[in-house]
Image 1: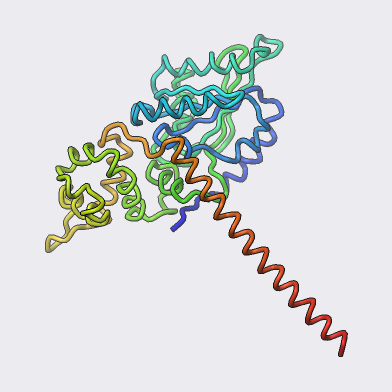
Image 2: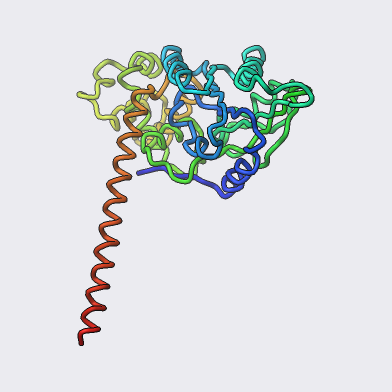
Length: 321
């Protein structure tokens, strides 16, 4: 089932970005290094009018380092774009973003032409933690749930460097189904918008082959249990539930608790450093989703044309009588 989540305050965020962007020199988009493609907001390219961009792959300590390098190369190849990976709470790497922004806007700087930077990202991607690290004190609220920041904030990082922080914003409709599940697994979507068991099953299906050794070590599973040809993913969730003590009276597995354990273990990095998508995988998902959207639109248009044709026929019959 496709996952969707777009709370009302996100409409205000979109409006604030539109109003702010004419005065902005560089746009920072924070991404989750475990799912860079899925955590990139497709609305930003439209809203930011092709301003120079810095992609920050946050939570790199939780992501597969080889996959992170592939994603950095993917973004660095884009015109007018830089990309860095960091942990939002690590002070030294966080300072690198200031230098990267100055490289993207070399004609800005000094008191006469201060550098104005907008930072955006999906909910719960770590913007507030990063900003608090940059300024060395708690300027913004943080928490392990989406939607903490509700208003735009202006933060002075240097005499000639102004950072405008916006609330986390998704896009009105998630057309890439795989992205919806990845976002839910990472904590980028409110809990009331998805079913934990569905998300856990999709998450296990995504990681069981490339990271079988991590799951085996965490849950004491054997090769057969991790082999998709021998063990369906719902049976894998049952096995994990037994290992994690998620049993109800009579020895039955509590699937809800098992699902929550799977999701929480992924978020906490208990499986080790894992990335849910490569640039090539995401491009394939996006192309397939766009094709489905085009087919749906063609079908809707055909239905509208048929209805319009029926109305015209009825009107002609009425005129003839």
